[in-house]
Amino acid sequence: QTHFLSLSLQAKMSRPVQARRLEGIDKNIWVEFVKLAATYSTVNLGQGFPDFPPPDFLKEAFVRALSGENHMLHQYTRAFGHPPLVKILAQFFGKLLGQDLDPMTNVMVTVGAYQALFCCFQAFVDDGDEVIIIEPFFDCYEPMVKMAGGMPVFVPLRPKAPKDGKLMSSADWQLDPAELASKFSERTKAIVLNSPNNPLGKVFSRGELEVIADLCVKHDVLCISDEVYEWLVYDGKEHIRIASLQGMWDRTVIIGSAGKTFSATGWKVGWTVGPNRLLQHLCTVHQNSVYHCATVAQEAVAQGFQRELKLYGKPESYFVQLPKELQQKRDWLIQSLDAVGMKPIIPEGTYFLVADISEFKSDVPDVPDSDEPYDSRFAKWMVKNKGLAAIPLSAFYCGAHKNNYNHFIRFCFAKEEATLKAANDILQKWKREKTNP
Ligand code: PMP
Image 1 (tube, rainbow, N blue to C red):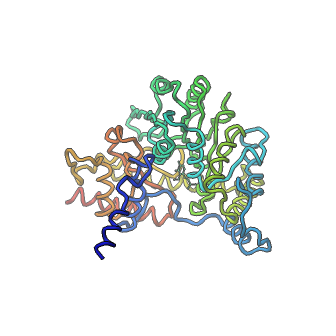
Image 2: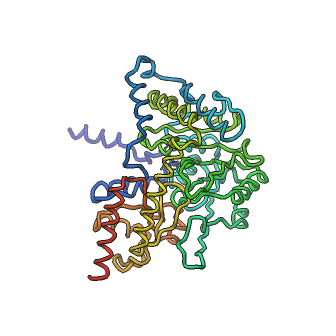
Image 3: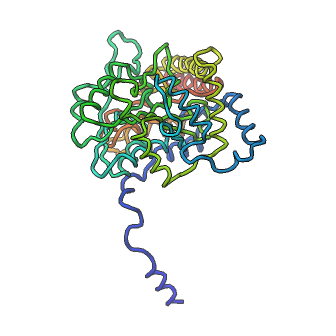
């Protein structure tokens, strides 16, 4: 027995098990906060997903695909995208971009926008290449760049308080053009643009996009354009696709998500649209990793887009109805946060809203010298003590900048009226307890 024990000890590896590319990227905010929300929350406005169903036409399309005559929908389909889906995406985005797209070379389907992002970084980023990321950013960009061997270079949106005492808008958070220009160098391979932006809800204006586009052209830099919230734009604002600006089509990959587009995040259908000279390399990553995406879900999403193409711009279109409904939900949440003094930053797009928690600091005192940013401790305290889940804004900043933006939390308002009302009740009660302790 002793002999067996010593053999098994010898067999234990003494060198590190994990590859170097995993160093420093093992923490993930969602794993932590999703677990906290599941354990403690009564109202979850944390992670970004609707708690209402996808539209009936989409669910019906899925059921038809699943139980219809065509049993081949249960088998593998084309690796780079189910033909009906790439065809309708080429037609739809061709119309939006005002150019002919080839379904076989200008579109690739992925497992959600997440895999589309992964393919981009793996396909374009070499050891030591720099990738510019605009803060606050959807958190996975940073570890994905690092895993590819690249160096993320961060540039923050700078908030400017409105003078007239009005509520701040996401439009008040802007890039400083000189600061942005200073981040470009011969090492820059790509910039990640996310408009409408998660978490702020900022919708970049044409002028702002032109500044980014000019720098991309000047420095021969690629643009990875995460447009998953493209339909969720409010107050008559317009979502402008950077690929449509002068010199940008050739250097841009557009990323989209059926999860966000059709309120079906669990289906994990995403896509990339761009020139073949870029997409062919995404195909190489895809064929050597995931290879196929689920056929039935692709078929249903294809039918969803076929319906939307017919109804494009009409009041019955889901892409018209969803933002209308969400704008109302946004306005409810703005009102209820403003009423208790948790100052909301009015989002121009997405289904997220960032709020200032400064007035609630007395309830959750700071711990000097803590490594954890204040907003993170605040969000944990809030879910444990008030049952309301939200995400700290510092999670959307790099390590060096987290403490510059540590008094905001992000709420998701893609929720049923009853959920938003329950959140309002919690906030009102909290406010009353604050005033009459
Ligand atoms: N990009 C952004 C900005 C997102 O917010 C999300 C989802 N939260 C994704 C990409 C990933 O989308 P999917 O669920 O389609 O993978």
